Structures are given as C-alpha cells and as structure tokens.
Length: 269
Length: 256
Image (cartoon, rainbow over the protein chains, first blue to last red):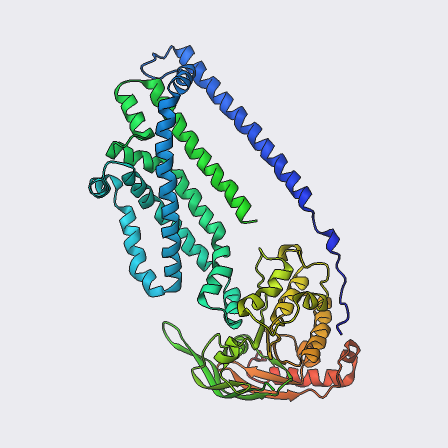
C-alpha cells in the first residue's frame, strides 16, 4: 500500500571486516610504542646506575631487580595471587553494591537525598583511621583487604553508575512510559545499557586504585600479599626484592586497567 | 472507535518563584480517525498538550478521555504511539530491534510484523543497520515504524519532521498520510510549519501563548488523498493565509 519513498542502499554501509582490520593495526602500533618506551626507560635506568656509580643499597640496577624477579618468583607470585584475589573480589563486590545503590537512587529521589551524602562522607574518612575498626571486624586475613577495596572502589563506581542511569535521554524514557513499560523494563532495556559506558569509566577509575588499596590494607593488617612483601623487603633492605614487588604491583595495576578497557570496548559496541 | 475528548483541561507548572499556566481551558474533540495539526508560537503548550494526552503528565484540572477511558488505561493497554522530534532510537539496537521494542515491552499481540513496517517506511534492506549508520530522515522513519508497531489507536507526533530538510520532509508527509489512512488511527501532529499543517490535517488548531489556549479552529476542505501539486493551488494558499492570519492575530506580532 505504501509507495517506496527513496531507495537508500544498504550495501554502502561500512563492513565489519574493514573495521576489525583497522582496530588490529591500531593495537599493533600501540604495542610497538609501549615496548620501545619501556626499553628506553630501562636503558636510562641502567645507564644512570652505572654512570653515577649508585651504591646498591640506595637503588638496585635493573639486572638485580630482574634477578630478584626470577629468583624469588615463587614468593612473589604467591603474594601477587593473594593481593589480586583481594582486589578482584573487592571490586566485584563493590560493583554489585554500587549498581544496586545507584539503581535505588535512580528509583527514588528521597533515598538519593537521604543516603548519597552519607556515603560520600564515609568515603572521605581516611582508611588509616578506619583500619583498626575494620581489622577488629574482619580479622587480619583477606577479608579486611576485600573490605578496604570495597570501601575505596564503591564511591566512584556508584557515582558513575548513577550518572549513567540518569544519562538516558528524557525522550527515550518518555517513550518507554508511553509504551506502557514498567520501571524495571525501562531500567533494564534503556537505563542499564545507556549507563554501560559510565559504569566502565567507574571501573577504570576504581581499578587504578584497587591494587593500591589492597596493598594498603595489607600494610595495616599484615596479611601475606604484595604490600606486606614490599614492606618487609624494605625493612630488611632487600632492595631488589622490594623493587621486584613494586614492578609486579604496577604490572598488575596496568594489566587490570587494560583488561577493563578491552572489556569496555567489547561490551559497549 | 477512538475519539479523544478534552474537557476544560488546564496545566500549571510550579516554578521555584512562581506558577506558570501552560494550558488553560482546553475543550476539544479529536474525531475518531481524524488528522489534527497543532500550531502556535513557542511556549504555547503544544508539546505539553500532546504529553497530557499520552499520560506523560497529568492535567491540573479537567478531564481527558481516549476512546471511553482514561489516558493511563489507554497507555497501559498500548493504544498510544508517540513520535518525538528526534528519533530517540536506542543506538545499540539494530533497526529491526528498535522497531520491535514496543512489542517486547507489551509482550503480546496485537502487533504488526516489524519487517513489514520497515518495508512500509521504505527501509527494506536496513533491518540489521544501526541508527548511527542512517541519515536523520531514515532514523525518523524508524521512529514512525516503531510508533506503529502495536497498531496504536492514537498517533501523537511532536514535530516529527522538524529536523529534516524540505524535500525529505515532503516525502515523509506523503508517506505518513498513506500510513495514517491505512491504519485508521486518530492522529495529532504538532508542527511549526503552516504548509505542513494545512497539507496534512483535517483541522488545524491555532494555539495562543501565555496562557496556552485554542485561539482558532480552521477546517481544511481540501480533497484527499492530498498530492504535492495541491500546494500550488490558490485554494491551498488561501487556507495557508487563513492559518497565517490566525497565527499572527494573537499578540505575537512585532509592533510596528
């Protein structure tokens, strides 16, 4: 019954293969750049140690750190595993908590006004001050680390998620309303997907600090992770081992960040 | 049969420092299967009126009936289709999934075949395309197909073609008239364009601002189906001039 209006051609749309090729080339360029940069930094480091004849008790050479990395790998990997488990468990817990809280705040203005300031204030309290309390509640094991990671991660996650839930265009929300959609349908079909980029921004922000918070918790509780390893290596002046721990913790942070970025790309296409 | 009846409807908005009357004393019957255009200066409450009918906002006083029931019931039984000025598509969904959205929400028939709707709005072959791959006119066609997915008895359009160029707009106007005729819905169109209002509608309601009231009702006696050539006829221009005179006759004219 309807006459064809204009006849646009679907074959002119860009293909998936071309897009994938372009992304792959960009990834290769990024890797080459990173390797070159790391290599240069290591050379400069080794050069300075050698040229200025820095004593080994002030700063170890890259070779010494490498030696510690390979020689003490068993100890390091065990500590890394402990810290990573705390970090990941804490972030996962924080993410669930943040999404639920943010959804509640989107659902009710009253809840938002009542609890949001409270949560933000709680976050501003120094972890150092709360730590003794946390240790008393959660003990000197992994639970305290998880709790600290949750406390540090939950606010950026929640603030971003709440902003994301509100970022759904008013017209789209109205459209769902006119279609007779329930609050849950609108939330699940519109608000949640619109919030995805914001949630990932929150994850990235939280990931940057999560490994550090887990290590901070270990410093305070003495749980056997990378934080404790670094602290002990420092007090025994085992500088190569300490720096190996630092390098590993940094690598863990960067890896976590890269994984979240990749996940974000996959999920928000 | 789906008549829309407004009896003495008003809408006031409370601002921090004062109260604004957006609409005042609107009494109007939109006949079943008719096509009505709303035109008026900015801030006359055209869009608000549309949102009152769609149960997005409650009226402050007065009563609205769609068919024989309340707008809230009409909305929940999926009798209302709404087209916004921007297409308001979900960017991660394909064209097909966007058109299917109301059917998913309703979770039941009566629903039209989304593929047939896409063909009807001239987008066959684009079922799997994403909104970002489409032009503005194509996106708006998707929005219209989506609004029709549940065979609405009432089709409300808030300047649906406002962002389109003149050629696309006229094509879409013709297309929309065909769709409206075939579906038998009661259509209400908010527009800024006098010629679009005259070309599309049976009745043009001219609203005045502050507070929003119906200032004039102009019946368009041009024969249907409407054709683009009609826009050159003296009769068409005469009606256009009537609407123009009504529109500028309400104090919005710049003083000489």
